[in-house]
Image (cartoon, rainbow, N blue to C red; front, side, top):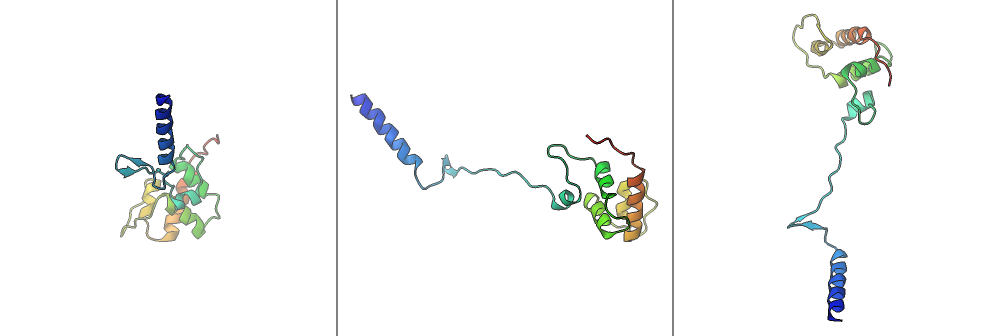
Length: 125
């Protein structure tokens, strides 16, 4: 009989502690929940990637081709993928990453268009 009373007292006190107003503690620190990090808004707005599978730079550049040619929106799409870092007098671009060095927007847009259009179409999965 005493054993039953002892078990009942322990269970009752445990339920009383569980209903306390304080947050749960781990040692002397409060228990916190970790939230997932968000993606960059610019990259997500320019080209939404399927969840769990990141897109390659080539696929993201080709997605920019769907926007109207010669517009600021298309250039902003390219700039979201490869941010511009202008140099005083850049040489001819050898790759799509070199397009960021052009200071003039028209030159940068033409450079990106040339490389994005020359990429072979990737199979859709």
